[in-house]
Amino acid sequence: MNRLQASMFGAGLVFGVAGLAGCEQGILTDPGPLTVSIEQSAGELRVDRTVVFEVNARGGGLERLITRYGDGAADTTAAFGATSVGRTAEHIYQDAGTYEAEAWIFTFAGDSLADRVTVTIRD
Image (cartoon, rainbow, N blue to C red):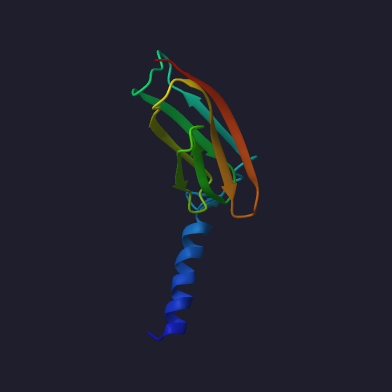
């Protein structure tokens, strides 16, 4: 296989994976509108203890989901063109205070959407 063939083969694999994102048992489905949500764990939120976030997104051609914790830290989850992506994110805050955690979803079409939650961490 020469370089051109290898390149075309690789492009076919990428298209094949992305092309199946909206299929359910071979039937093309409508992914619906772009949505994203972030929710924090219930209970007492303290310095140096794990805070759990549930982060979910839906839509067509999803590229990546970014979770920002409001203290400078962030995580990225690749979506590879899927119609839904979600994760359970864990984060430990080092200082007491109020933070705004964010979930951002980005699509291959250039669309983006965010949801935010306020997190209050106590000593």
